[in-house]
Image (tube, rainbow, N blue to C red; front, side, top):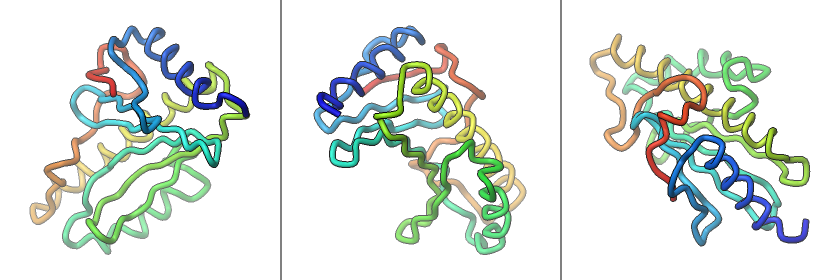
Length: 164
């Protein structure tokens, strides 16, 4: 798609207008960050070579006895039951879970961009809430200090904290 970066920037700008977010901009790396109620953030970026919009959120670190959670995580990902079409992955280097989704910009429009973001935020809220409950139940477990917890479900303009 010709001018795909500008198309992506337009989606972000119109999302910001719809949600009345001031200062939300795409940076030089074609990325913007949205924080939700100071609880978690979503990185939204555009990969020019793949022509895809990428959504990424950090769920947090698994508890020290995290192996016990893998079956539940896999069950939640079966047919995207608890992920709203996103993928959950585990980074073995730092022990964190992330949620990601990729969308081809050639099949995107303003409404779909908003819907994917809303579904992604709902999934982030679900996963962060799930992890928090399990961390609270297991005192040896603790969330990563760098990774915030869950916020309200859905896109609420009052939740938005900052842009790029």
